[in-house]
Each structure stands twice: as C-alpha cells, then as structure tokens.
Amino acid sequence: MTWIATIPYTEAEGRLKAVYDRVRGPDGQIDNILAAHSLRPHSLEGHMALYKYVLHHAANTVPKWLLEAIGVYVSLLNGCAYCVEHHREGMRRLLKDDARADAILQALEADHPERAFDGAPLEMLRYARTLTVSPTSLDEGRIAALRDAGVGDGEILEVNQVTAYFAYANRTVLGLGVSSAGETLGLSPNDNGDPDNWSHT
Image (cartoon, rainbow, N blue to C red; front, side, top):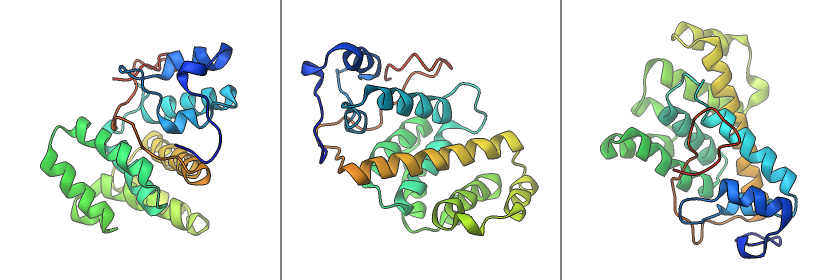
C-alpha cells in the first residue's frame, strides 16, 4: 500500500480512529492516500480539508467534472498513475457520458487537450499545464488569456488551487509509494460545503 508503515482501520485508536470514521467510504474503505497519513492524524485532517475545500466545495463555480479533468491532466503530467486512476473515474461519474470521458482522457494522455476542449476550458487546462511543468514561465499574460476566454478571476483561483492541490497529492503518492491496490475508484465526498462532512458518495 505504501513504503512507510500505515495503521489500518481495525487498529486505529483515538484521534486517528475519529478521523478515519469521518473519511471512510460506504464500504468502510480508507483510501490509501489517506491511510498514508496515519502516523500523523493532523496531517490527514489537513489534507482532507484542503481536498474538500478546493475540489468539492459547493461555492465553486467551475463544473466539478472539469476540475476533475484538470486534476487528471496535472496527474498525468506529474506521472502519478494513482491520482489519474481515481480522478478519471470521478470525472466519468460526474460527466455521465462515457464517450465524452473517453475522448477527454485520450486527449489529455496525448498532451493535446485541444482535441477535446476549446474556449474557456481549454485555456484553463493550458494554464494548469504551464503551472505544473514550468511555473516560473507564467506571467500576467496567461491570466489575461484566461480572462479573454471568459474565465472570471474567482474561477482562475479555483483552477490555480486545484492544480496546486494535485501537485501536493501527486507528490504525497509518488514520494510514499502509495498504490491503489484494494481500492474502489472514483469515490468523492458529499459536497454540502462543510469540510467536516467527509463521507464518500
């Protein structure tokens, strides 16, 4: 599951047990990326709160499936198969259109998002790519391109934060050898805007 010791749900106590009870899925699953934090429950709490606020908060206005697509793209660019597996399934579930999901995935895997996107979504993906692979090359011109495509500043912030979150999540996975063995893919938290509501759907 990981290269470091993890504490399974059946052995969890105290704060860790309480956090596990909040993040486990309907089948009792604790995602391996979350179990990787088990030696430091406060780190797990921070990770999950960031994930909920950035990717699943009800106040976001960028469609959730598109935020998931951005996460898939960033994870592909970072070589994080674990996050790609999870979030492509999340994107597919939200889209409810397997053919569209397959076309998007093929375009992102080829590093040619323009094959599946245009307009504002394409500019969001281009921004996410640059922020991932060459962040020091970004300048205000890229923000202007987003605005010209109709992306509002609040939405730019959402894309920025999703891209940054996946950089963190990808490095958590890659740096600790997290695998998806034994997991159900594509689950996501209920989004009522409450970071304390971490149950999966």
